[in-house]
Amino acid sequence: MLVKQLSVFMENRPGRLFKLTNALGKEGIDFVTLSIADTKDFGIVRFIARDNEKAYEILKKEGFTVGQTELIGVEVDDKPNALASVIGILDEHNINIEYLYSFVLTNHNSAKILMRIENTEEAIRVLEAQGIKLLSEKIL
Image (tube, rainbow, N blue to C red; front, side, top):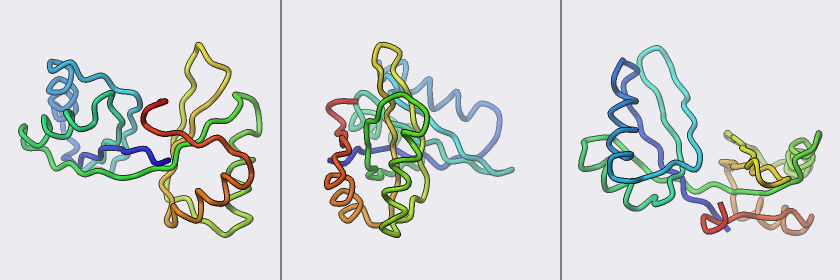
């Protein structure tokens, strides 16, 4: 029930993001999600690829500092307050979200929410008990 995400730590300077995306693109790797958090000097590129294992190997070979993180993915209706409902369930159980990002596929009426959570086992238990649809990498 967990989704693996790749995280790349890199300098925040021209050409670095191109090097990353080009290294994957020329090997046929497609992104499912992509998020960039930055500071003045460094950034973290977080993403899920269609083939995370191959993407990981390519980036290591290219000299990138890359790690893997497990996220909880949920699917909700694409409508107002759906995100707040999921966050509210976790909040009621004092479960902290470290970060999240979401996306909507245009041919579906649902939104995908990916969350990094301190206590993933407890969060999964709570969300399942509330009938929230959990995602795996297979259905992204």
